[in-house]
Length: 321
Length: 288
Image (tube, rainbow over all chains, first blue to last red):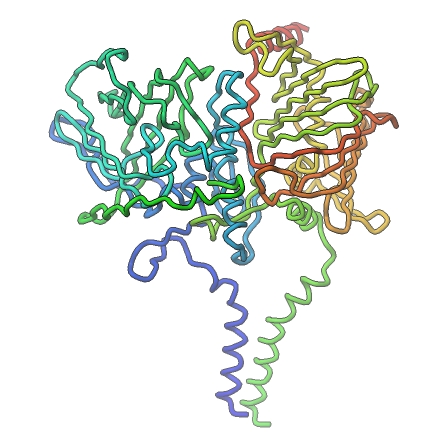
């Protein structure tokens, strides 16, 4: 046998040793076509980088395309982040609200799972956080049942709007002296991700009295500044929405939502505080959600796919998102 | 054989050994405590990864909140037992548990709740949280006993054994793996001894202590008939039969009807009067 053949066998043996590692795609690596990969090995977000720009009138400038993580609402790492589950690395996970450590084991190699196994895991991941709105006790069973029967009960099924604050944080913010434009691109056929926009005045006006408003999905939103924090105060909602991405969190027509936006360098932090004394024992604030500015100065929002939901009518089990 | 070919052959043997030896070692190494904890967690479906975009995540313990219903022999107070229904809502983060027992002959209905360092009885679920909604009665001296129920469940065993780190010891008894580890926080001073079966399911949990003040917390729990007992399938395996003995007497022997492991909406807010009472107890202790 020639040396070349021996060397070839050695190379083969060496490459076999590396096979498990080759199965991984590193975070940040680009997928074919240049789009950032959606798979992430952690759910904590990077530290802010860069300067925080300001407008000529001295306010923080929120203008930009805020989808720099290239993630979507249905991405499990993104949802765990939103739920307050911080996977720091292969050995460490904690709950953002309580600080409690969560047992974590390194993934020796990508686990083979069929769609059913993968979705069942996702269902658990999406609900494991400690942060829960505290409903009045007479509604505890109702919330549980709504979530358990989400295939029939979720008001965003069949392409209906998610509404505020379930739609979360916008992917595009346009800032003008007297108003803001928020755009929420839909992702096509998925629950609670229909395309939406909001035009939010910041001109000192007051809310219309609640009894004079016809309820809407997004409510009447009015913005003001609290220091460098942009605050959007909304009321006047229809009751046909849930107020978080998951969980059966219904609300009354008296729901009052306070959204807070903070920019630090290339990060946008968003929270929503939901106050609804008709159904909640106390106001509840979402876990802070952090988005990254798209670093491409020419970044554009992609065209939304049409919403065409056809699967739920065929669901025969209670397994759901 | 020319010298170059000898070197290449030697390199090939070394590369082959590097490839094969770890596999052989993995197959023959004696299990250590960490591996047995992972095996027990795997058996019940606790470590999970995946979902859209989650293929690179490590495996994470996904169990926080659970609810289950059973019937059979249920606690009747002071170590006694009677026939009835058993309904438990629980959470590990924060540690909390609500045990609702409905006994027959004579009829009785109790709701015993614990969260963190607070324990109270509810006249109805959620009592004491709103005006006109029943009463919440503080039972400060029940905190340890109620929290213990949470940690002697199979999932509590895995979580506590993992949290105990190097303090968790592995042994074998009659060929079965046995994990022994200390509890912490409110339950410091208590050691759990958990026995696993051949499929790595937790089948028996015994409490141990050297502290006479904790001797009333000695329990022996047994679990069997593991399956996914939920309406919404999660691939989480839960026991279908639970027995708990206290001082040799059976205080719980229930067949499970349903076990929802899908992190359902369960909350355990502490009523203000319970917080106030605990504050007063703390003040009394501080004054001593």
